[in-house]
Length: 163
Image (cartoon, rainbow, N blue to C red; front, side, top):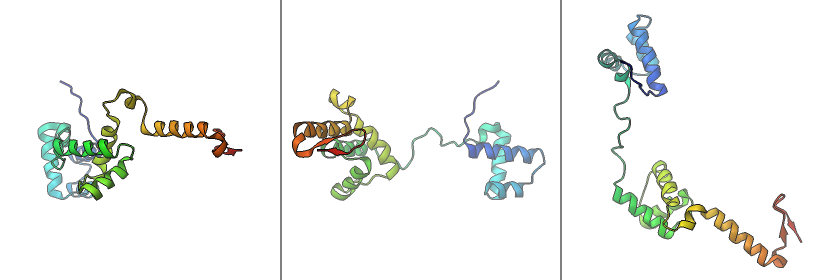
């Protein structure tokens, strides 16, 4: 019976070291130094490998939600605030405004991911196909077209003003 096991680079390295211990090419103390673990932790890894093979070295936390994540209600409340007030802000500035004005703090990594996804999701069909930046670009181009005499003409290739 063969099954597919997904392992990180760190877990693959551990597997190689454990196999070297089993082949008696490496001692437990040397393996502990290589892996940056204690001797007792290497013994635990050996036991897990003996019980379950390579699958015993794979993290049991993989695929499970973090214990530190915010509740769905909290996340939705933050995203609603962003959609209402800060839709044209980037994720970093939106996060800063949430902290400064609403005392809502999200971790930088999770907020980046959630905010990027949440800011793209919109109920209006036109807003899904065109992002905030393209709408700004269009409005700038309209301002240039409508008031060309005042602003002069810009070359798109060189970004230089032609009067």
